[in-house]
Image 1 (cartoon, rainbow, N blue to C red):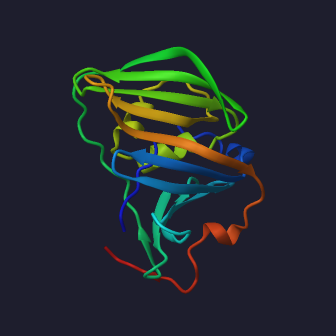
Image 2 (cartoon, helix red, strand yellow):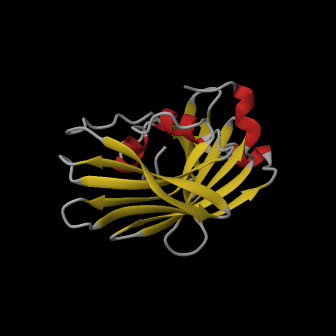
Length: 210
């Protein structure tokens, strides 16, 4: 199953993960593509649904268990699931310079603070607009996933964020010509109860051993 970006992003006491329950919808843009994705969150579990480019069908999903520290991939088309290994990020060139920006934005009714991460040797600058609400699941999820894309790696260089922090918008650009490489934007946040069954692998799916 095609791995998705995403996106970005120790562990606190397990009870703290219950602070946010509901769904977070976001779009991920590149120069070649735009994808729609949704996080479903309840207690220590998160499900990431990745939608097909056309239509509303779910192309694939990841299920994160922050208590057990496990990740599962789910393929609805083939009705299979399997254990997803944490990724190994590539070696970074140079050094990231992190600054808290002066700008702020209100996104989805939430005030966000700008942080800028710049790496001259990698010709990359990423601006994050970070909310410090009750999104306690996000940072532990990103640490568990350990993604190797620059948006995730550079986000990890921002120190001192509160445990409920999550970027609601981020833009990756080339320093040399200001060309946008990728953009992540939250489009809808809904606080609601999530059925536990939504965060489980369907009973009729078979395990795929890699």
